Length: 261
Image (tube, rainbow, N blue to C red; front, side, top):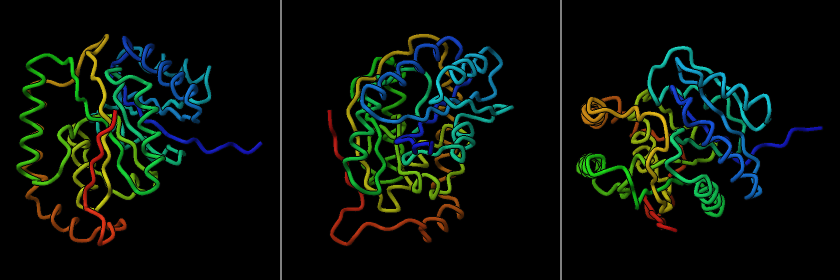
């Protein structure tokens, strides 16, 4: 019997997430089954030193929708995602952290919006209601304002909002390089410059239920320095002058943001 192509290949990078993936993976599987979508969940053991890999292997043995993918040495959040893109077989490719801060049902709703768009699109969430705590909210506001200063007109006020879902050809054609936390910004910025429509779904951002966040103060400094290098590098300017993806038509705005939910 010929294997059906998944509707979505969802990459879930997991770095020392033994405390939470037993909650997030089953919820994602259940939400997409209920929504009637074929899900390929690429669970990436991103160089973990705890039982994360064992737990993923156990899920994969029990459910063919779960694919175990191992990165031997952790080189960053982005690297875990980049390493899994060639493994994906779905018509759409998505990415979401393993922290469970966005409801699984909202991930399925985001795929609904992406498919309904009928074209090249970046579908992502906007965490309009967040329970991160005051400090994280201030950092998030500062970070997004900083990006708006560097790239005026970008539109999105939650650049790091995940999940992000793109057509497989688009994801593979972006030439992504960031092996760290900058990957989220790289995706949004490249889509903006290449005329790809960006749609956002308003969601409720929950607190991490278990496990530890891997975002530290040094991560914020890393964001800022790498964003500046990214913005003003010669390589970036050369790449943006030779887009490899279809540009938007003359009567279509370069960026269209649709807030739903």
